[in-house]
Amino acid sequence: MQKNMEAIDCVLAFLQKLPLSNSSIRQYKIYLRSSIVPYCEANCIESFSDEEMQAYAEEPKAKNGEFSKSTMIHRR
Image 1 (cartoon, rainbow, N blue to C red):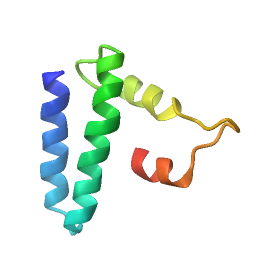
Image 2: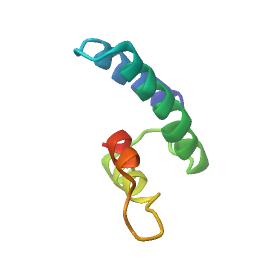
Image 3: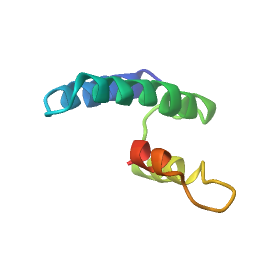
Image 4: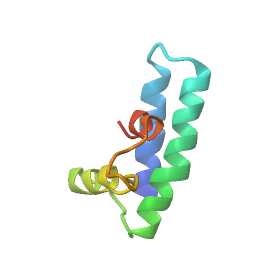
């Protein structure tokens, strides 16, 4: 799990270098820590590979087989 937290910290540091508002960065931080971290913990993922990223991206489809707009925005 430590590798994932370090990766999240790197992503957040990268985002702070982009022309994004503080609230956007805060939303990414909340989403990463409230969605990806629990997913990794539940699936015993210590390093988020491309295959695991794909599985994560496909997981929470709505009943009709589609993502909501807000879910897609965060997951991309």
